[in-house]
Image (cartoon, rainbow, N blue to C red):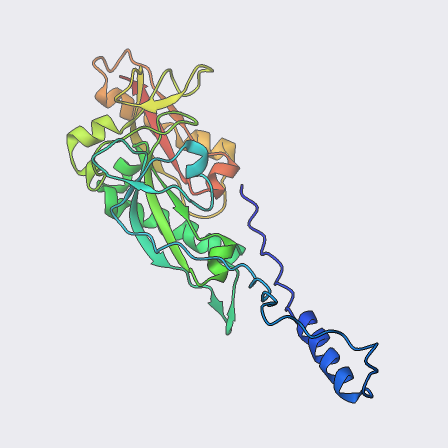
Length: 287
């Protein structure tokens, strides 16, 4: 991730002022110098250039919803974004669906934009608002390749007064690839066509080594077709997750051409995925 440590405060430019003041005081207190020791007066055309002002950071304009961007996978995972926008009718990889202001005032003190509290606030807000933008039910969203990413100003921009956050919708095309989209993603999961195109499929069963998650619009052999929520609370452990995946067997039988001869699979979260918010199991079947 980008190093976002606060830069040190600039040293006040007091030294030149003190030197000048000291020179004037010494000159006014000294005896009249002899002609030989006097310094010739400066030429009228001679001027001393003022010191350059310290550099300041200018904050970029506040982002706008409905704008689209051509981000790489790494840029989409960065905490800040400097890539400009492109028309949504052209190929892009991210669409801004929400913009807000961070709440970084705590007990009368402003928190740094890269503080854990501010970043956690944005990391919770943007995924929660994704559904209102792309549509569909919670289950349909979890069975899609649509994801939320988020950005805040750089530390320098925050020092200049920027306090916004930006939520973008992206479409995964694989483990580390973004899909190029043309047009808006607003309400895309409200239609059968959108759910088919942006659904989550696999190149093999979820327990096979060759398994890779892909868009259902791309070549695939398996599809994630159902979601089973797990109880709230602490991570239940691998054994409990495995037991909770057994209902996927009956769910797969219900959609199979032959309920006596069919394949099924499931994938549940490990402790790290649970902490990241995946508190459910996905059921898989050949497609």
